Image: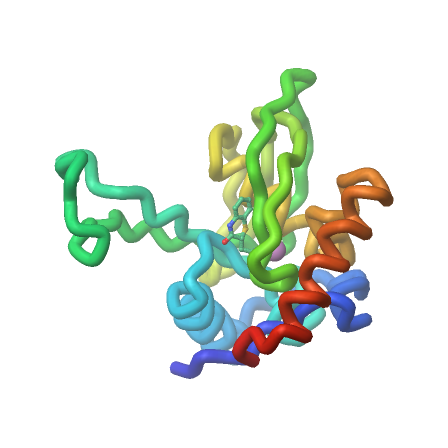
Length: 185
Ligand code: GNR
Ligand code: NI
């Protein structure tokens, strides 16, 4: 297993359209294991292969929600998170709700910037898992939001592309300033 470097905007690779996986191989499964390790380390709740430089339609998600029995005043270091790793290969949205939901999104490729994004609240999605097995499910909540964010990456789209040019340029300027002021890496 390995923690891979995460590509950040304005790297042109993030604009690439990723290609479908024809057959899921051991090499893909190794990449997926490395993607989980990279995502947990970041930390993040999702990661698309292109964010580690691989232009294939593969993404991983783990919402890592807090265990239901976590006390309100729990020490942040000790909060137990429920691990629920999910792999999506060649995901396709076949239906989306008219109802929208707004979520304050962030992205490991646009570090430390956050903005509200509106997306369909519910989606019907089909995909393959790491064994090549087909799935078809209706998803909602943060999982639907995160999956749409990740699927955007497969099409070269970042969450900031959903904002007005004014707002996007503002966030990119802020990020540039943060980098100049000596943000690590
Ligand atoms: O860690 C992440 N958090 C997040 C929050 C709201 C909506 C989407 C995301 S995905 C992001 C990790 C990432 O950049 N995935 O591509
Ligand atoms: Ni992202």
